[in-house]
Amino acid sequence: MPLCGGVLLLVAMVRPPIGRRRGRVLDAAMLLCLLGAAAQLIPLPAAARDRLSPHGFTVDRIVALDADPVRHPAHPLSVDPESTAWALALGAAYVGLFWCARAMFSRGGVRSTVRGVASLGLALTVLVAIQRATSPDLLYWTWRPISAGASPYGPFVNRNSLATWLAMSVPLVIGYAMARHQSAHRADALALPGDALDATQLWLVGAAVLMSGGLLASLSRAGILGGGIGLAAFVALSRKRLHRASVAWISGGLVAMVVVGSAYANVGKLALRMQETTEQGAWGRPAIWRDTWRMASDFWLTGIGAGAFQRGMLAYQSGSRLFFFNHAHDEYLQLLVEGGLLMAGAAAVAAIAGVVLMAQRLDADRTAMFWVRAGAISGVVAVAVQSIWDTGLRTPANGVLFAVIAAIALYEPATGGAGARGRSSR
Image 1 (cartoon, one colour):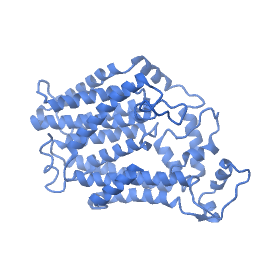
Image 2 (cartoon, rainbow, N blue to C red; image 1 turned 90 degrees about the vertical axis):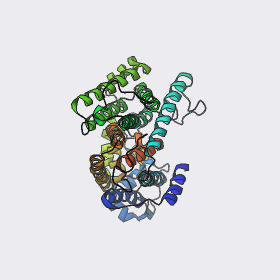
Image 3 (cartoon, one colour; image 1 turned 45 degrees about the vertical axis):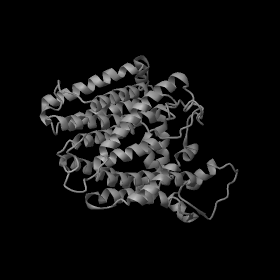
Image 4 (spheres, rainbow, N blue to C red; image 1 turned 135 degrees about the horizontal axis):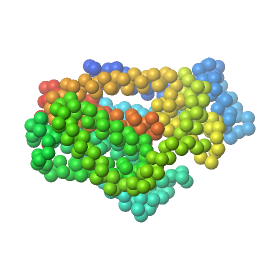
């Protein structure tokens, strides 16, 4: 509620432009996603609901506490209207924050924002290390999570959510360190050894190393894989601005950073976690995906309702109920089952439009801010890969960070082209 209220106030203050220039397709697609979730809350006559969602009443009957639930004359498409309303509010907050950040960054503030992310990441890593060593079962040493099987990592209720935040942040912080370096040295000497680093650069590098160690210590397999591919994407993007020798030095530096960061992780436990990837049990991801796909097939057009996965799975989980599947462990599959083809189609258009715009903005940027954009895009790549196995973006802290880094990747300077605001990265 504070997040939604804060974003609403921010929108009223900033009044961000929407649907202008090349961003109109992206903005329109995001609006369609929100309208799709809102449409799932509209009460429909029983005949109309049965036509659009023929299995909706069946799920209502299965999960109802009554032996013979009353079939109301009008019912929304969502099988869990309360959860859908919250999902709509949270989604609107993410989109509103993205629009506001994009508008604000066009006038400046990118560098201070990245410094804030680096500070938060450093504090988060230290907090998690201390909390896991002293009180591994409580949030902030005080609150016990509602789920009995939860294993808190600092302010996050599980390792995967923590890994999502760190996997997005590390490339962004590295990109800002590179931008500062280019501001002080020739572009063609950017990655060569022997160049002096200022205090802020050393702090940024140290923060990136500790955050990488925190990512490895989380033991989140999908998060580590996503983070690794995000760093590989950063190296690939660097080829747009540097010659081969400099790219090699960047690659070596990132490998060294990860090696140093691994000193903060339990390598033995990490190896065991990676070994478990090949093990498939009754509660493994393949079992979750099979049950989720059956639900998606029954609600293929309009979806079961944004945020309604948990209630729908009460009717579709086929295996043991010792563990309950409250997420699909695949962001794309969960989007399909909750929104159907209509909402998933709009989300796909938004994703494609966003990728095209990111490529255009990066190619047009001839300043040191290129590296910050490259770091933001690499963070997006990292979470896109992790989302194949996890749904970390549904944690509000991660959704907020994703909105901010997407705005960094996509903002357009208000005046003077890409270079007007980007000459100083300090």
